[in-house]
Amino acid sequence: MKVALLYPEVYDMARFRQERKEFPPFGVLYLAAVAEQAGHRIEIRTVAPDHTSLDLTGFDAIGFSLASSATYGLMMRARHDSRIDPGTLIMAGGVHANFYPAESLRDLAAHVVSDGESEDTFLQLLDHAGDRDFGTVPGVLFEHDGRIRRTAAQPLMRNIDDLPLPARHLLPRQDIVLSDRLAGTDTQMAHVMFSRGCPFPCSFCAVGQRRMQYRGGNSARAELRHLIDAYGIEGFAIVDDNFIVNKAKVGDICEHIADLGLRWSALSRVDTVDQPLLEAMAAAGCIEVKYGVESGSERLLKAMRKNTTQAKIRAAIEMSAKSGISAKAFIIHGFPGENRESTRETIALLRELQPMLGRVSLFRFVPLPGTEVYRDALLHGIRGTHLQPGWDGDWSAFHIHHNQRHWWGDEKDWAETEASYAELLAFVEQTWGPQE
Image (cartoon, rainbow, N blue to C red; front, side):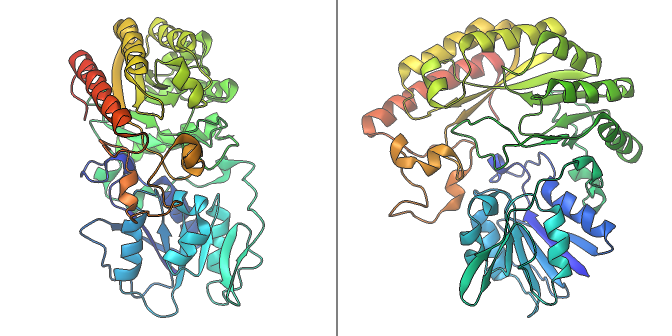
């Protein structure tokens, strides 16, 4: 069967208004890998703001990857602007579909939508491309006799090591190997995923899977050896939602890759690391850990359901420095309740930690679809969601890079938020350089 998989061209959804590639579309690459393994012919097509009218004739099935809500409108345009043969199976899946499957089914005029982990589901849907009998396929929504039917959830894989390596060969080499994305160095690097899911309940974060799935050390090593042999990489970045959760799993991966001589980075919370683990990571080549610090205000950390403290933030940064690993802090400014006092608490904490912080990335708060603050918008005083009256239909409003929309509070609140953000931005740029 000939299958096309479509995804938004710009990899980092935060920067989809800029032509800056970050990491490849792993969801699509894993689907392509399992489908090729099953004998299907796969093509990956990109969708961009100036390229939504595609010639998709000649395919038996087409899958739309709804990789973020910010690019949902873009993918809808591609669905309705492109040329598609009558009778072609239209499927949709991805982050946005996981949160809003019924709307995705309707908006894309799809035959079926996958809700959740999709590799097994994808293969079963292709098996039913001819008869369109999706009732036995777990984890899908489809229309039958004028009503939307939802099947039982697709069980999560017990062992994601069983998956083939993502089908990077279907993308140009320059989309896989980058030279300016590893901890501020010029290392020739690629991106990898060694785990799935995040068990933590942060109210601003759109994570669809709470159960963690880790790959084993042998599997991680095999992928890195492939990337060395096929692409000549010198390093890698782990792009998992929250890689450092299970210390034993992380330690197993470190043990298996330590002799490869690669430099790498990963993301973590501040309360899931300890000194022995960081030292094991450093010995395995880790040069940077990117921490979700978010704020220096314990009032806001509590409101975010972050469940961390200034003390835990200090401890993680100090342990990283002691291990010889550079620390990068992600900061979110403008969560409901932000004011001058909370902003200055953040500045004070960053100033204190400055000698041990290699980099800081500053983001403005956006109520991302699928998050707790989005679902409970009235509780947080949020406006402008698609679940509220008067929504303008602009999904691109939910990008997270340089977003200056007034999401909550009155004009006085917004003026204070703007002024305090300018103060924080000036401090960060003076100390760590311009924000991208």
